[in-house]
Image (cartoon, rainbow, N blue to C red; front, side, top):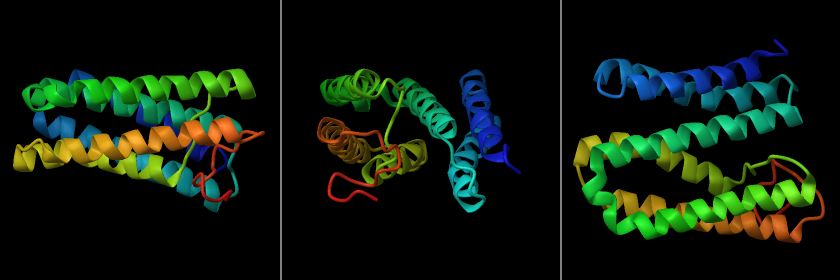
Length: 178
């Protein structure tokens, strides 16, 4: 049971890579996508419930999240590029802030780290919903909402890194420690 959370996280990496290969096969993609999302929901939950949280697991989870979200972004651009053109400057800004956050963490804490803040979790949940909302409504309004929340969560993570003396990957918000 000790390794189950990390196995789930590694499975998300595999499902994500397979999503890129099967993006044109709707049912296969939907199955892989669903499996990736479920593994994302379960890995941290199981780690906390079984008291198997680790720094390695948190970093592996951050890497798997980043890979899944980048893959989703690439695929959403492929499917809905014309609706996303006005958002490109915002997406680039968010990406630059996120990269900056990893660089700050690497310099300050000597670690590859992303924070599991509530705002980052909300951003992740909205990103997960993005393909579903797009294929249901074919409307770009949801993209704007996701983009603005992603910007706020990225800036919050920057502020946490700049004001914290130690790395706490599970910090919930700039407004409270735990």
